[in-house]
Length: 97
Image (cartoon, rainbow, N blue to C red; front, side):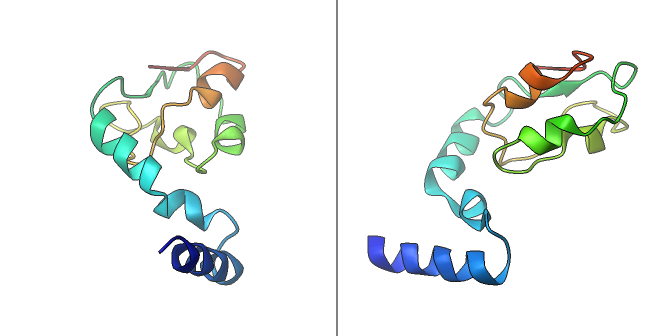
């Protein structure tokens, strides 16, 4: 099973995107199920200047800056691992959990 999933991941990475495994990873899926709606990533639209640095450091390529105009002002992406890379890198401190 490990060999077949690794092979599928490599093939999909070559065809679609190099980080495709991050979207299929069972660990990420489990953590998103367990952590869903716990400590959502919040964005302050007044502080965000669209520098897009948060999206560049995200290991699963979520782009938090795209959610700054959402009504709830939270990143509603089920795949967020809550690693805080985007929170730590934000120069304006517009992101928080």
